[in-house]
Structure formats: structure tokens, C-alpha cells
Length: 148
Image (cartoon, rainbow, N blue to C red; front, side):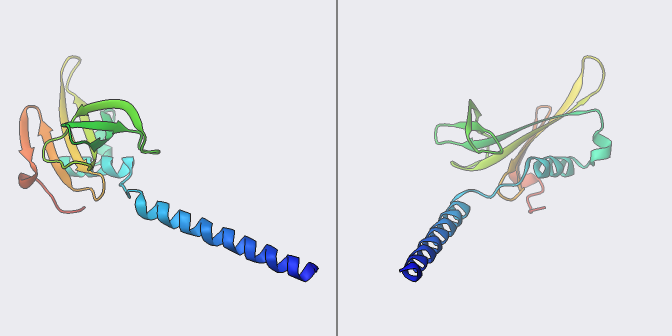
């Protein structure tokens, strides 16, 4: 009787392991694979032509966005991908459902003035979608679009 009970327990545990593995695989395949906050920051610096040591004592503001079909983009928590209950204008040249890092690099020129560069980076591969620099707009076709 105990040998039969042992076999049932082994089969039950094996079944739980298989089901768990399938759930993990499903979650892995269904969840988006996005570049990290640090990678997006590094890409923005690269697109700006500077490195981390040149960006000392400056400000970087970053938001992960998910575009919607109504011209708005949801602001997401980059760790959980949950909506932070905020929305912003959808970046130009982005498509519906796309995940986009909005990176703003701000360099103070003096007490009252600063220079700001805004980069919209495809969060799935690091490609620059769109950038904006002090009123001058550079669409995707004019910028570096290769995957870094």
C-alpha cells in the first residue's frame, strides 16, 4: 500500500512541476521584453553624443509609456508594467500598443536657463523613434535608427 501511495505522490508532484513550468513559460512568452531604465538612459546619452562622465550633475527624467488608440500614452511603472494612473500625449511616429521610453536630458546652463533634449526610444529594442531638442524636431528618418 505504501508503494502505491509513494507512486501517487511522485506523479502528483511531477504534475505540479509540469503545470508550474508551463505557467512560467506562458508568462515569459506573453510578457513584453523591454530594455531597462539604465539601458534607455545609455541609449539617450549615445544619441546625444555624450557619455555618463560628461553628464555629471545634470538631470534625467524618464518615463515608460504604452501608447493607446486615443492619441494618449499611459505612464507605466517600469518594474511591474502597471499603469501609474497617468497619461501623456502619445509620442509622434509611435504605433498603438508600443512601449516607449521617454528620456529627457536637462543640462543647466545657468541659474535660470537650461538646455533640454527629449528622446523617445522604442522600449523593445532601443531604436530611436523620435527626438525633440529646444523646438527643433528630428523625425525617425533623420536620426540613428539602427539597434544599438
